[in-house]
Image 1 (cartoon, one colour):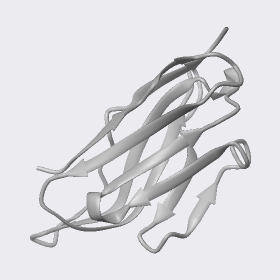
Image 2: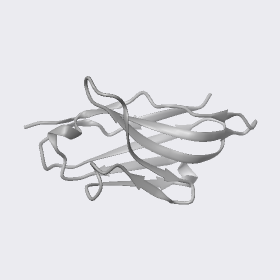
Image 3: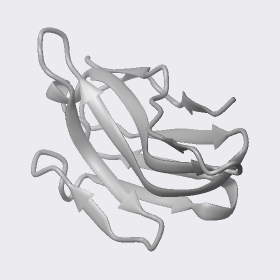
Image 4: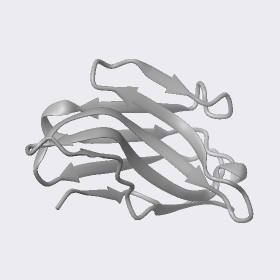
Length: 121
């Protein structure tokens, strides 16, 4: 059983910072790309940032310069450091693994359960 578990969400004031973590566990051989998505109330889920196993990174324009994604391949974990948070960053943040290969060579694309980030004074 492979699962992704996010942590680190919460309530923060505008201009503040939060750090999210997502750990993948189970019978994992490798994960090609891991990503953070977010979904605000009444809006579609959108990509925030992703990172390949080799370290290539992509950010959405709305978070460039404020958010930093990083990855620990040995721990199958990614992080999202969020600085200079704005009320429009309020959303449920989801972790996603794209092309997760299990030890028995199944190709999965799992999602985490989500963690709520609220930016408000």
